[in-house]
Length: 143
Length: 139
Image 1 (cartoon, rainbow over the protein chains, first blue to last red):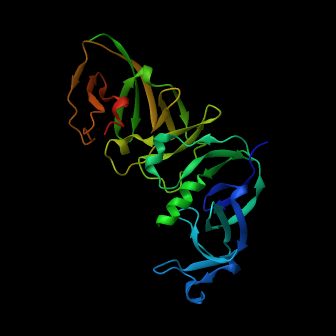
Image 2: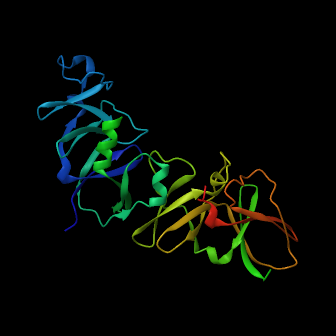
Image 3: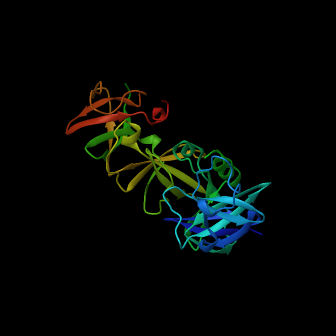
């Protein structure tokens, strides 16, 4: 059976995230501004403006793809990878699907983007980018 | 120099020629997928041969030209396992190059830093930039 993924729209791209690593999907009404956080909730030096409370901790909200933004109509996808949790804003969650086999992103193209793309699957005849979650979370931790 | 068959194409104002054996096929960009956060000279990826993705590059971008419009055709080169594509505007014809053809050093505005330009082939009807596609990524 094909792996189930959550398909989201982020700007002009459709993106798939492995379903087993999705912890929660929240509405934009759950976003709190940094100045509204309880004292000590945000780590020292954190510069993120938008935060969500998920399973006992406050997580900064980052955009899933460059060139997109966080708005009042965003949806927030909370991803877990081991002990790490991350919250990513997307334009819309489209559903849980089991698209076809993934075509691997060409090695030769990796130096020309900072987005950790693992490959492309096809869903309803359109391309869906699959992100490498371990690299996404690793990169997000460094930003 | 033995005779060899070349295929010509244009990108913007430039006319190029490559040995015909390096061209695997020519496809169009219609089904290309933009790469988020992608930087030139990468222009996108194309679904290719069922379960592969073809990285498509700006040829002029690889040769040091920062801004130019790319065409809708893609020359596919590289190996079966590691194919890559370059966007071009128009395909020309197949021509024979032999001992009587003059090949001069290229002195135009494209970058020569990694030796991908083998010279300027002077044929009746115009000059063509001879490309060594194997060296485009050598830098």
